[in-house]
Image (cartoon, rainbow, N blue to C red):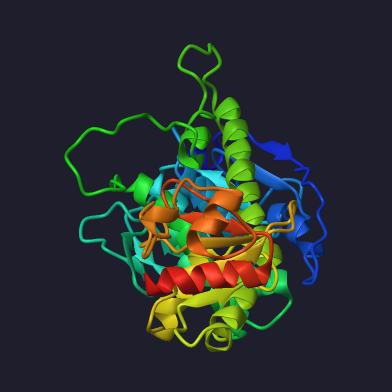
Length: 383
């Protein structure tokens, strides 16, 4: 036993560099420092005899995961758990030795146990079927498990609000949907589509693939634990930095855009009695928010057209809403007889001045003025 404990520590000390970025209106200055921890990140293959980091750089807590080839889920899971108050600055111990794992404060992706009361977050054992909930049914990986239990704490820290703040819950769900769920699915071998057809192209550019490529290449003569641990640190920082970018995007862009779309959606009746035309008084990404808010608020009738001003030309656009966020078909495309026409020919044909164009597919058109764009949408509703 003592020999196992005193196995060569093989530690790599790494002080991560994180690009600084200040966000408004919400304070995010602590995000970069918290992401990597202001304390040194130490990843090693075993622990010293006293079970604590040799130079006292860590918090005294130790988080375990398996050694050998690594994947995105445990890299992100280790990164995320170090963002929490309890495990800030924790050392990362990479081993499959059950006697060592039993002594650690948290264990991810190894050990065959899921027990959050003991901070055990493995998903490989028989009978494991844990999902995130809230309408999500993808089986969780170790990253998803850590996010499920600590995601609200992490987000609340970045927003500098309490965990029960309504924006924390919104971001908690949105970040799982847009970032974490895909990692869970890839690690658990869940196809994105229910089909037996082979994919039409290969995608090796997603985060899970990029993390996987950080593993030491089989042709590299140096296959040492030191080399592997250094690569795992890179994997943690890659996965973690992209997670933080997702948090920053959702705070700085996604949340304000949602508020704008909600306000405009609730004002449809002032635009047209049909309540099928929405006007964005400020342009922002709107499509996904519109679908989610319509479902959340049980909106009826559904929005058929969205009007917004083009920032470059200052003309107005009439865009038909798709049948789904990832579909090209529109709920009600602009009339077929308008499609492909431009300028005076289009204005003369439909009797509305200032027309600019209507796309051949009918998904979008334009007018020089707001009034003209509104008249186009109203006429299209009646067709």
